Image 1 (cartoon, rainbow, N blue to C red):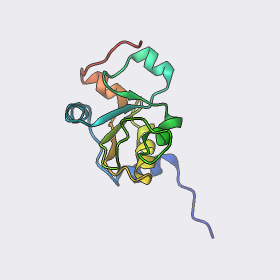
Image 2: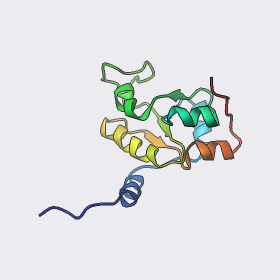
Image 3: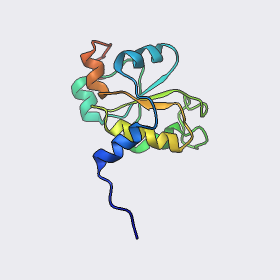
Image 4: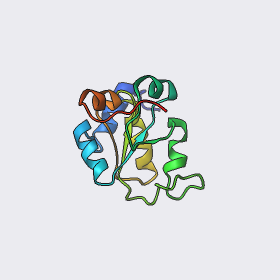
Length: 131
């Protein structure tokens, strides 16, 4: 007999219980200490709202391939499984699922930004216009 289906809201809440998320100020401080900010927002949102200076832009559908330290398509920043990664989406929902996926790859220090880019912007943290 199969288990009852889990709705997305329950799944996100269950995932969030497995690691500590960070708020915008903590994400900013972590980035100054070497954490990798990874913006997974799609292009239209980046063009509309701008970019976080220094954040690595990786589309969500490429995230695991780019950040897997053992992967053949990894970015130079994917130096090891101890890498501190803070995933940023628009409002902090897709980033939760992305962080869980990174945990499954062994990136145990991956987390996400509560409230996403919108919380970063609301906190008055640096935002650059799109290129």
